[in-house]
Image 1 (cartoon, helix red, strand yellow):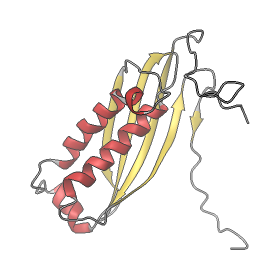
Image 2: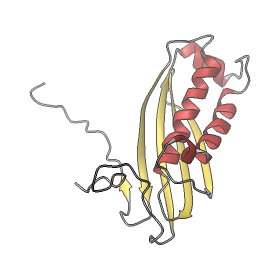
Image 3: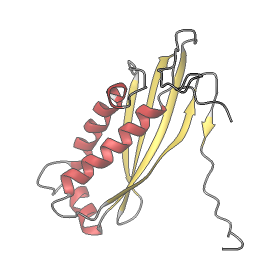
Image 4: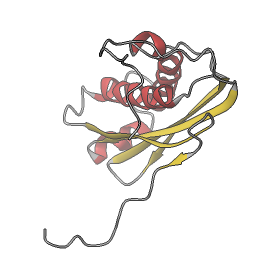
Length: 167
């Protein structure tokens, strides 16, 4: 396992020096799932939530959050992002998958920006719908894919659907 880069040889926290890295096209895709009552999802899809169009407000919140990740996560570099896309897909009657794709031409990756985008988008859905459904849950939040940079491509493996023995 590679060493943690946000700590120096004495264990002090540091922002990684990316000045010597080459500029490459970097892209990351992350997802979050929000679970709610079927009636809540129906209100959202029918655009009947009193506060407005839930998915559009959450999309804007996610975009703004991705742009401000360097201000939220202490050791993240502030980045001038090239693009941010956020999509909402109902998975069934009570779950919505939120997906963010973020890209930049830069010296460091955008994984944190993509995960921040889906996290804040999910929290915004919760905030806009909490009056009718306080039992909503958020998770998992995860990196699905990243490309660019020295470490190359990462693609999350599909969940193992084979039965586990001994459990």
